[in-house]
Length: 68
Image (cartoon, rainbow, N blue to C red; front, top):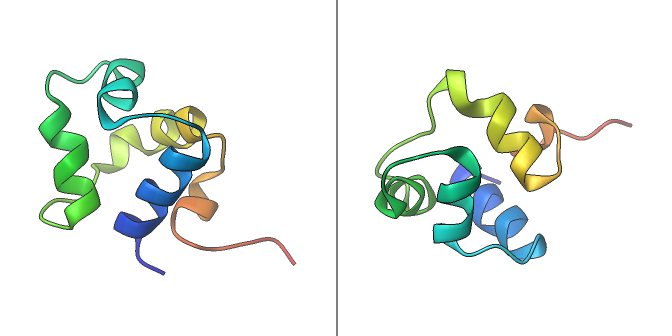
C-alpha cells in the first residue's frame, strides 16, 4: 500500500480532516496534505516523525510496514 493511501486511511481513522491534520502539523496550507494524499507530492523526511505522531502510528506504519 502506498504512503498516500496510508496517510488518508490513518487520518480518517483518527477522525481528522485534512485541515485538522494541517493545523496539528503546523503547516501553512491544507493543500499540502491534499497533495500528499493524491500523490502529487510526498511528505518530506523532516516531517515524518510529527506526521506519524499526529496519525497515531510509527514511521514504519506510514510506509505500510508492520512488526511481526
